[in-house]
Length: 197
Image (cartoon, rainbow, N blue to C red; front, side, top):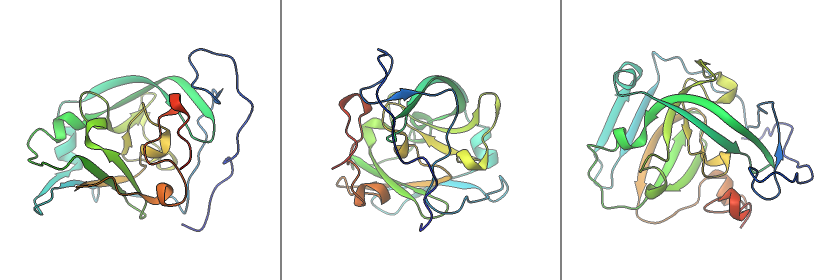
């Protein structure tokens, strides 16, 4: 993860009540990433949830497509200060994926193809708050935006919506992921401007 793309700098705040503090509105969809873009075919894609006792729940792409699919309209907010309003996604709710998962742990670590990790409390993945998203604006998700599938947790800064997601591991404590170990806030609420530790 030695390469960091352009755009990790902000602009001045706009006065728009739909924008969290310190954000500016963009009509684009900036691509910000650390490291090269993984190219994962749907034939090789797999998603897992691993519990504290080592049980692995596993879904292939075909398995994912067979689950109930939801349309999601939401605003997204990047810690680099851009916000994009009214975005359209399709994906599978984490509520659906966790329906058969038995765990007493309250925290998760999302893992991506390419090695990226980010921590999210389990409560922030359930209750209609998060999805494994595979379409954006009616089209398959581009690799640059995390395709074939990414985590979508729109109520937190977008670094929590891990691109190229490949699995979630249950954790007993809220251990830091990649950006959190590098100074970003453990939680990342955009309305509270929880950008950094």
